[in-house]
Image 1 (cartoon, one colour):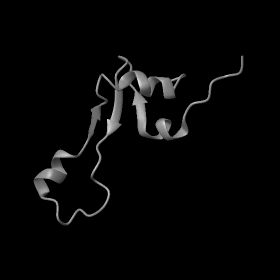
Image 2: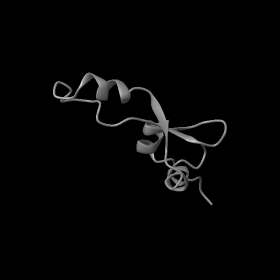
Image 3: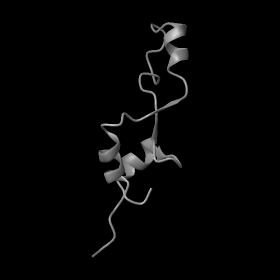
Image 4: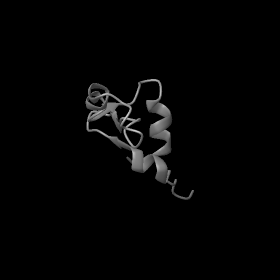
Length: 65
């Protein structure tokens, strides 16, 4: 059986933490930032966990993470 390939797009977007949770970055922070308020841009900083209903599909895309 050949090795499974990691989806390269998923590897760029997600990281698996030591506890098994999956970390992702926030969306809506790339462009067209002038019309967004400072508060909304500030709240989009940092990283958050992937929702528990999506963790299984993300882990399937990254079999060795």
